[in-house]
Image (cartoon, rainbow, N blue to C red; front, top):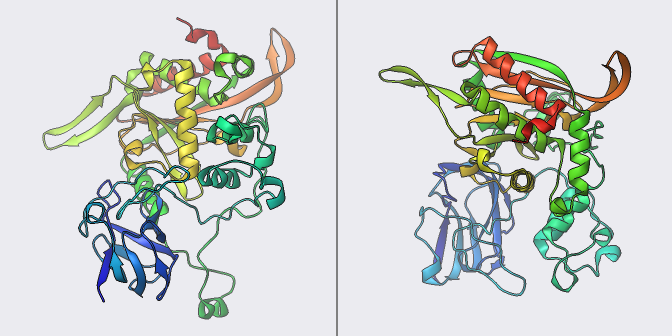
Length: 437
């Protein structure tokens, strides 16, 4: 009998360790090549690892909840066999493979098929009877479950009546014309915590201890470094965003945007890019070097969008956003949001950002004092857009009003520059025609 040992692989981007979250197999189980055997959590993502071997599970070497180094043995498989060309040596770097098409298979060796899941409880799936006749691939069905979408209510656009990813996303986004006008309802269960050991619960049932791992650990480290290294200053102003809302409504009705999600965040993103050209220091970075400190001024905008995911906060960015048209930027924002929501944002998309937007309006918040993303000099927060009484030409009228706030690194930019930048962003939200050149 031959036995192979599966070592924890580097799933890309220099992974050093990972937590074993969930085993999908146990000793004695029979597995085939590409069967998902374990779910791991890195500092950036939750990844399902398929087996590179076919055989019978011998011994599970690492318990759930343990953190192990890359290259450490985690499971043995007896009578193992696998195509030699598809199985890298233990510890070799691995990149996630593409999802297999329906009816086919893709050998992925140590790699992930890209299927990333969440430990947050998912919205209840639609009744089986109502969705049984819907044609959709497994990843699309999972996306629908995550978004709480009833597939039987989705209008398919794919060949042969198949429901596509865009169909599901569009259906989910049509619940409200303007996603962040009203405060969203909080789910009954926001995020599961680590179960408390029985002995601890008996000793003090009012408290529990939650280990800091994965994205939460990485976020905490970044925020502490930023807060205690960059002197933050925050400024804000209220904005009459009525014309922005009118523009969003027109774009939604335009055939050119029929297959694209449009929201006030799109106008906000264009406003930030426009304002950066007038105050480029907000797009700079403070760099400490051996020969002293310097300010690194970037002549491009890698626009970060803070995204709240089931696993925690991540900040993917759109590279060279200054070169994109309005429609291209809308598509980029849509892809970024969907990828983050699915937990599939690659580490490369979370590096080299130059300035960030955080849309706290989706949580019903008016304003905040956000912490700057490390390596940047500014972060802009967009508050909820709601109708308020507003003075227009000496008369009080109902208008859509929001608050734009921003935190900046005072080593890089002074008060006049911060204020001018926020005023420029506000001016575009009040009159989007400024974007027309």
